[in-house]
Image 1 (cartoon, rainbow, N blue to C red):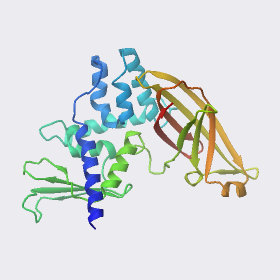
Image 2 (tube, rainbow, N blue to C red):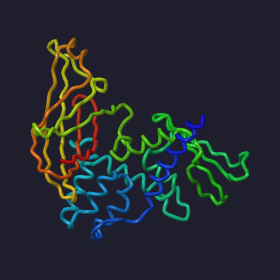
Image 3 (tube, rainbow, N blue to C red):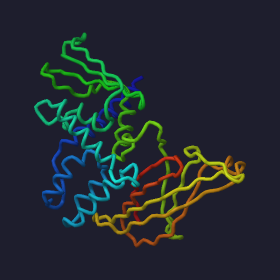
Image 4 (cartoon, rainbow, N blue to C red):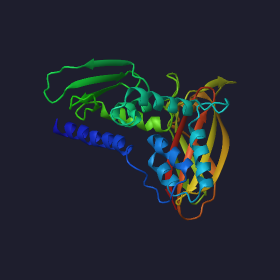
Length: 302
């Protein structure tokens, strides 16, 4: 029991650190122009640490503008439409948070506002103005059935300011959902699937190797084979932040069902030459025919 409590305490520290960090100022290495600063002010909510490191080391306005274009494009759930549904939803949630969760500071900077921006409107809300705890003046509970999360916000001062209850359970699920949100995967429809994959760089063969667990895939049956088609988008940045390369590759998979049943993963190789150094590999995997979509960033040192 003590070990279990320690696990939840550690997770609580992590999730609170994630939320608190959103209110911290820019820690960039270079001075930002007004447009870049305005972008970073809110976009850092959904930036992962590698993206922050890249952005804060970009040397000029032009490279930052390129980063901003890529940042939204990578999160666009449907590149075939003119609108970027993710971007519109993101700013719509910020506007909603500012309207309904203001607590002496802009609503998007409050705990409720941040959770709303990450996860959207809850499926159920319970409000309890009076509970059997003299240190708590009010409690609001948000339930997200999709993520199996129940989040408690408590008012300890009686002034309508609510913070996440650090003693609640389901912290692990909340942390997982927030990480998905940063890649845009909590903004997509309920029917969408999450894909998983891993990446490594083979120095001897000079190849990028991507492996996809078979258990996370669905196939179409055609001509006695199980088939699947994939699109891979690669964005490669050097340690200093500058983009080194960007390219797209299409790959198809087709094997008899008996062979697929023997597989644990599907492996794709992409020839690519790298000089010694540190690189960020930002990979977007799109499975065709409703297979799903996934994105990950990996650090590779040579």
